[in-house]
Length: 351
Ligand code: NAP
Figure 1 (cartoon, rainbow, N blue to C red):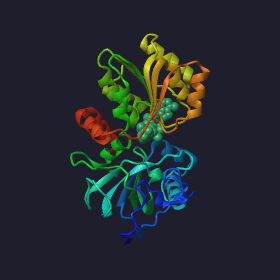
Figure 2 (figure 1 turned 135 degrees about the vertical axis):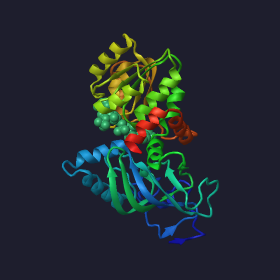
Figure 3 (figure 1 turned 180 degrees about the vertical axis):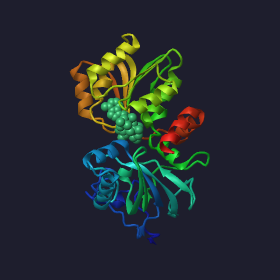
Figure 4 (figure 1 turned 45 degrees about the vertical axis):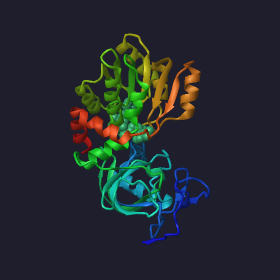
């Protein structure tokens, strides 16, 4: 490894972009993952686990029928080899990673981590230069892969030092969806009726729990979840007024079931947390005029959402689920500490 004191690098990581030149790392087709040369604004990580984005993991499983987890490993290796980052070319999404700080460049300021600390990255793998040396165990339930390799964060790349009061895999899983809870807190109001699509999954459970806390006892929370065991888990948490075991890609059926559960009231807020394409219309059809839809799902299509809402004459505000909200990591870890039943469920699934 050679560190060039004269090479500081761009705060946004433009210095690592190989193709097309002039773009930023997330939009880039290919980034430089040769860490023999390091820049002084970079943080080098010895990578231990990749937490692949749920939509990306599912797409890779479906693209490699009959191959099991080997198919996902093959595609991850191919993607990293060709792009220098785990940027799924089909879904466009990434994930995040867990590893140990190997080096902090001399031009960095304000780091909370020291060399040797274990950290989770809070920026997408779709923009994080990554070299993979080997891949070990794969855990489909959490979309995590144990790996050996290295990655760098740029000066603007967020990360969290892992807490020492919970298992690392649990923290990693929760931090993957850290943007969700604080944004649900912002958009929900006391007394609201809230619909969560994909409500039994990782971000869905967090959104349902956070929405329940914010809307209070006069509010209504409805979850839609197609995977029966996860729907049962959600029912057991007791945060929803109704959990509908349905397909969020079937808007008319979802609207009928939701209105039946709310006594005919359209919801004030809908949150999409599915890992499949095609749930936009269910959220739109169930939301009242001037209500809010928060599309956290990476499968969301701007075209389907915009033209779909227009097509059914719904005047709704639609928000893109920014992965980042100020203080999101601490907020989400605090939610796990405050909600022992959620923590126990997540430990069972992901810990
Ligand atoms: P997850 O744990 O896999 O949860 C998704 C849930 O939706 C699963 O329980 C899934 O069931 C369920 N589901 C799948 N198809 C459905 C359908 N047709 N109808 C109803 N439910 C359905 O995923 P996650 O980690 O929470 O992520 C959820 C979404 O958020 C993904 O699209 C992911 O890419 C995105 N995400 C966004 C950000 C951001 O910053 N905005 C960050 C992280 C993740 P199965 O178990 O059967 O699949």
